[in-house]
Length: 254
Image (cartoon, rainbow, N blue to C red; front, side, top):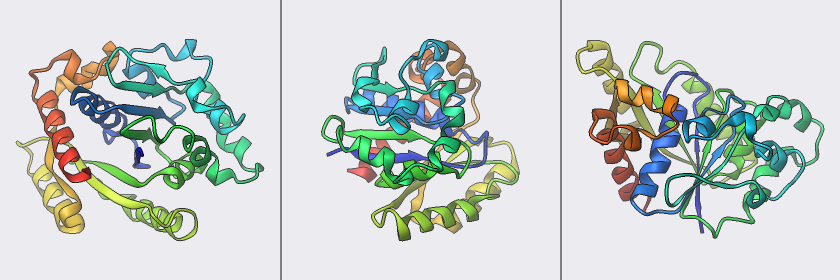
């Protein structure tokens, strides 16, 4: 049975998609079978794995709105053990279309029920909002992983996100848990970064991962080459940090 994990933060620019791509590919590198679902209309997870989003004919939109089988749209990536359910521009209007549909919050959960024996892990890259796409992801998930950047306003919006998680847990998905909190874009030269780390650890306790992702040029460059950082520059600080995170994740999740 797959573990389904949403990677979520409604604040943009926190390393959410970067984490989704590199955690998924890191676990695949460690020979776990992984599916990454791109649920963001910006399609950055899709292009970050080397696919042309303009050429995608079947996307997460077809699963949510047209009730197509996810296995009909899942694509093999260039990375062994890693598959992708891609996104394209069709997702832009999905939330509006879902509003008047029956069982609108459970459509992704019902679709994924047909493939939960096919992977060790299914990750959902959520959009930077708390709308119906994110609600569908949280309803379908066993847990939620929150990336937080080590910068000013890092904690901004987290109260609302935690309220949303609590709401989903109380009304749609009682089993939903907080998987953990990953700190990203850490600059060891900046006092502010260290202050944010201390604040996050104080607030989340053991749910804050020990691995901290540094601010790293190679991590930022890799998506433009359609590659996870492991396959762009395996020796970079960012690559080594994400590999450490994948190993820590497995120790916690397993």
